[in-house]
Image (tube, rainbow, N blue to C red; front, side, top):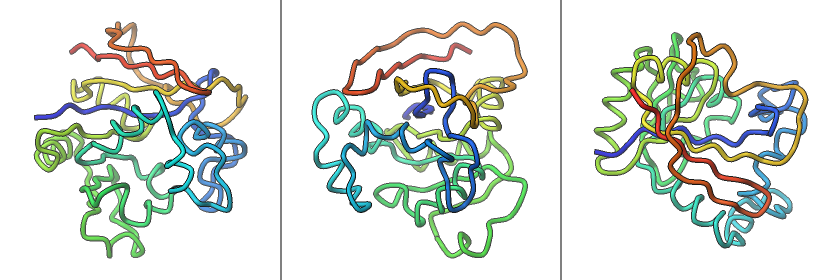
Length: 201
Protein backbone atom coordinates (compact mmCIF):
# COMPACT_ATOMS: atom_id res chain seq x y z
CA UNK A 1 0.00 0.00 0.00
CA UNK A 2 1.22 3.50 -0.80
CA UNK A 3 1.85 6.38 1.58
CA UNK A 4 -0.20 9.47 2.35
CA UNK A 5 1.90 12.46 1.32
CA UNK A 6 1.13 16.14 1.75
CA UNK A 7 2.21 18.03 -1.40
CA UNK A 8 2.13 21.82 -1.07
CA UNK A 9 3.92 24.82 -2.55
CA UNK A 10 4.73 27.41 0.11
CA UNK A 11 6.37 30.82 0.33
CA UNK A 12 9.38 31.28 2.59
CA UNK A 13 7.11 33.05 5.09
CA UNK A 14 4.78 30.06 5.22
CA UNK A 15 1.86 31.01 2.96
CA UNK A 16 0.17 28.69 0.48
CA UNK A 17 -2.03 31.44 -1.00
CA UNK A 18 -1.91 35.19 -1.19
CA UNK A 19 -4.61 37.35 0.41
CA UNK A 20 -8.14 37.80 -0.97
CA UNK A 21 -8.85 34.20 -1.99
CA UNK A 22 -12.19 33.84 -3.79
CA UNK A 23 -13.76 31.48 -6.34
CA UNK A 24 -12.43 33.73 -9.11
CA UNK A 25 -9.06 34.24 -7.38
CA UNK A 26 -8.32 30.75 -6.07
CA UNK A 27 -4.68 31.36 -5.14
CA UNK A 28 -5.27 34.87 -3.81
CA UNK A 29 -3.36 37.98 -4.81
CA UNK A 30 0.12 36.96 -5.94
CA UNK A 31 -0.45 33.34 -4.99
CA UNK A 32 0.10 31.96 -8.48
CA UNK A 33 3.77 32.83 -7.99
CA UNK A 34 3.97 29.70 -5.81
CA UNK A 35 3.28 27.52 -8.86
CA UNK A 36 5.78 29.09 -11.25
CA UNK A 37 8.11 26.13 -10.68
CA UNK A 38 5.57 23.71 -12.11
CA UNK A 39 3.97 25.99 -14.71
CA UNK A 40 6.97 27.94 -16.05
CA UNK A 41 6.41 30.62 -18.67
CA UNK A 42 2.72 29.79 -18.90
CA UNK A 43 1.14 31.76 -21.73
CA UNK A 44 -2.57 32.26 -22.36
CA UNK A 45 -3.40 29.61 -19.77
CA UNK A 46 -1.74 26.78 -21.71
CA UNK A 47 -0.79 24.69 -18.68
CA UNK A 48 -0.03 21.54 -20.70
CA UNK A 49 2.55 23.38 -22.79
CA UNK A 50 4.10 24.85 -19.65
CA UNK A 51 4.39 21.43 -18.02
CA UNK A 52 5.89 20.01 -21.22
CA UNK A 53 8.77 22.47 -20.80
CA UNK A 54 9.67 21.15 -17.34
CA UNK A 55 13.14 19.68 -17.00
CA UNK A 56 15.48 18.32 -14.35
CA UNK A 57 14.46 18.16 -10.71
CA UNK A 58 11.17 20.00 -11.20
CA UNK A 59 10.08 17.50 -13.84
CA UNK A 60 11.07 14.63 -11.54
CA UNK A 61 9.00 16.03 -8.68
CA UNK A 62 6.04 16.84 -10.93
CA UNK A 63 6.08 13.30 -12.33
CA UNK A 64 6.08 11.90 -8.78
CA UNK A 65 3.11 14.09 -7.89
CA UNK A 66 1.19 12.99 -10.97
CA UNK A 67 1.90 9.32 -10.20
CA UNK A 68 -0.27 9.44 -7.09
CA UNK A 69 -3.34 7.22 -7.15
CA UNK A 70 -5.90 9.27 -5.21
CA UNK A 71 -6.33 12.78 -3.80
CA UNK A 72 -7.58 13.99 -0.42
CA UNK A 73 -8.25 17.70 -0.09
CA UNK A 74 -10.13 20.15 2.05
CA UNK A 75 -13.25 21.85 0.77
CA UNK A 76 -11.56 25.27 0.75
CA UNK A 77 -8.74 24.02 -1.45
CA UNK A 78 -11.01 22.05 -3.78
CA UNK A 79 -13.75 24.63 -4.27
CA UNK A 80 -11.35 27.56 -4.67
CA UNK A 81 -9.71 25.59 -7.50
CA UNK A 82 -13.04 25.04 -9.24
CA UNK A 83 -12.87 21.38 -8.29
CA UNK A 84 -10.10 20.90 -10.88
CA UNK A 85 -13.02 20.41 -13.29
CA UNK A 86 -13.64 17.04 -11.65
CA UNK A 87 -10.26 15.56 -12.53
CA UNK A 88 -7.11 16.44 -10.63
CA UNK A 89 -5.11 14.03 -12.80
CA UNK A 90 -5.69 10.80 -14.70
CA UNK A 91 -9.23 10.36 -13.37
CA UNK A 92 -8.10 9.32 -9.87
CA UNK A 93 -10.61 9.31 -7.03
CA UNK A 94 -10.88 12.65 -5.18
CA UNK A 95 -12.00 12.77 -1.55
CA UNK A 96 -13.06 16.11 -0.09
CA UNK A 97 -13.16 16.43 3.69
CA UNK A 98 -16.20 18.52 4.55
CA UNK A 99 -19.09 18.70 6.98
CA UNK A 100 -21.25 19.89 4.09
CA UNK A 101 -22.57 17.93 1.10
CA UNK A 102 -21.08 18.46 -2.32
CA UNK A 103 -22.41 21.57 -4.09
CA UNK A 104 -24.52 20.86 -7.15
CA UNK A 105 -21.71 21.71 -9.55
CA UNK A 106 -19.41 19.11 -7.95
CA UNK A 107 -22.00 16.42 -7.25
CA UNK A 108 -22.15 15.53 -10.97
CA UNK A 109 -18.57 14.21 -11.00
CA UNK A 110 -18.53 10.46 -10.22
CA UNK A 111 -14.96 10.38 -8.90
CA UNK A 112 -15.48 13.24 -6.40
CA UNK A 113 -16.60 12.17 -2.93
CA UNK A 114 -17.48 14.56 -0.10
CA UNK A 115 -16.80 12.88 3.25
CA UNK A 116 -16.74 13.98 6.89
CA UNK A 117 -14.49 11.35 8.50
CA UNK A 118 -10.75 11.68 7.87
CA UNK A 119 -9.78 8.18 9.05
CA UNK A 120 -12.40 6.56 6.82
CA UNK A 121 -11.40 8.84 3.97
CA UNK A 122 -7.75 7.86 4.29
CA UNK A 123 -8.61 4.14 4.25
CA UNK A 124 -10.76 4.54 1.16
CA UNK A 125 -8.20 6.71 -0.62
CA UNK A 126 -5.37 4.26 0.09
CA UNK A 127 -7.52 1.38 -1.14
CA UNK A 128 -8.34 3.32 -4.33
CA UNK A 129 -4.67 4.21 -4.85
CA UNK A 130 -3.42 0.65 -4.38
CA UNK A 131 0.37 0.61 -4.45
CA UNK A 132 0.55 4.30 -5.38
CA UNK A 133 0.73 7.18 -2.92
CA UNK A 134 -2.23 9.31 -1.87
CA UNK A 135 -1.81 13.03 -2.48
CA UNK A 136 -2.96 15.07 0.51
CA UNK A 137 -3.71 18.63 -0.51
CA UNK A 138 -4.99 21.08 2.05
CA UNK A 139 -3.99 23.18 5.00
CA UNK A 140 -5.58 24.37 8.21
CA UNK A 141 -8.09 21.53 8.60
CA UNK A 142 -6.56 18.40 7.11
CA UNK A 143 -2.90 18.83 8.11
CA UNK A 144 -3.30 19.08 11.91
CA UNK A 145 -6.03 16.44 11.99
CA UNK A 146 -3.98 13.99 9.94
CA UNK A 147 -0.80 14.52 11.96
CA UNK A 148 -2.55 14.20 15.33
CA UNK A 149 -4.37 11.06 14.20
CA UNK A 150 -1.20 9.48 12.80
CA UNK A 151 -2.66 9.44 9.29
CA UNK A 152 -0.04 11.51 7.44
CA UNK A 153 3.06 9.55 6.40
CA UNK A 154 5.15 12.22 4.68
CA UNK A 155 5.25 15.88 3.65
CA UNK A 156 6.61 17.21 0.38
CA UNK A 157 6.95 20.98 0.71
CA UNK A 158 7.94 23.01 -2.35
CA UNK A 159 9.50 26.16 -0.88
CA UNK A 160 9.44 29.09 -3.30
CA UNK A 161 11.84 32.01 -2.68
CA UNK A 162 9.22 34.68 -2.23
CA UNK A 163 7.61 36.49 0.72
CA UNK A 164 3.86 36.88 0.26
CA UNK A 165 3.33 38.73 3.54
CA UNK A 166 -0.32 37.74 3.83
CA UNK A 167 -2.62 34.91 2.86
CA UNK A 168 -3.38 31.42 4.13
CA UNK A 169 -0.62 29.69 6.08
CA UNK A 170 0.11 25.99 5.75
CA UNK A 171 0.86 25.37 9.42
CA UNK A 172 -1.49 27.78 11.18
CA UNK A 173 -3.07 26.56 14.41
CA UNK A 174 -1.74 23.01 14.47
CA UNK A 175 -3.03 22.50 18.00
CA UNK A 176 -0.11 20.47 19.34
CA UNK A 177 3.39 21.07 20.64
CA UNK A 178 6.84 20.12 19.43
CA UNK A 179 6.84 17.40 16.78
CA UNK A 180 10.07 16.20 15.20
CA UNK A 181 10.12 15.36 11.50
CA UNK A 182 12.59 13.02 9.80
CA UNK A 183 14.31 14.55 6.76
CA UNK A 184 14.06 12.27 3.73
CA UNK A 185 15.27 14.36 0.80
CA UNK A 186 16.20 17.87 -0.31
CA UNK A 187 16.14 18.65 -4.03
CA UNK A 188 17.15 22.00 -5.50
CA UNK A 189 14.99 22.80 -8.50
CA UNK A 190 14.82 25.85 -10.69
CA UNK A 191 13.14 28.53 -8.56
CA UNK A 192 12.17 26.13 -5.77
CA UNK A 193 13.55 23.85 -3.08
CA UNK A 194 11.71 20.55 -2.61
CA UNK A 195 11.79 19.35 1.01
CA UNK A 196 10.55 15.88 1.89
CA UNK A 197 9.96 14.76 5.48
CA UNK A 198 8.68 11.63 7.16
CA UNK A 199 6.09 12.25 9.89
CA UNK A 200 6.81 9.92 12.84
CA UNK A 201 3.82 8.56 14.72
